[in-house]
Length: 134
Image (tube, rainbow, N blue to C red; front, side, top):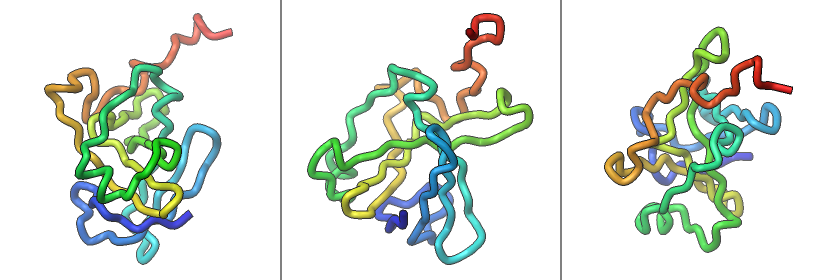
């Protein structure tokens, strides 16, 4: 699905349109509609943590034209590394999508209000050790 960027992704202010494509139930790929870069790997935050909740700032909700929570989708940028457990996730600056209107933006949360959300949290911090998996 294509999205118009109404709140820029930090460092990518010139990007105006992005395409979101699911890879599977957990991962997605976000690519620039007009060029080869940037391209981001995104992850569903609920796949890693059940405590990921935040209040969307009113200004962001207005720019994204969100009328209900059902219209919103939140994904996080992931810095992929090998092996996958060495990857990192940006929880402090989620990407918020308005699925209904095709709008998206990156929202930087207040680190004082959300001290448990990091800029590059290690993925392995949220994975069960292999010996605990069924």
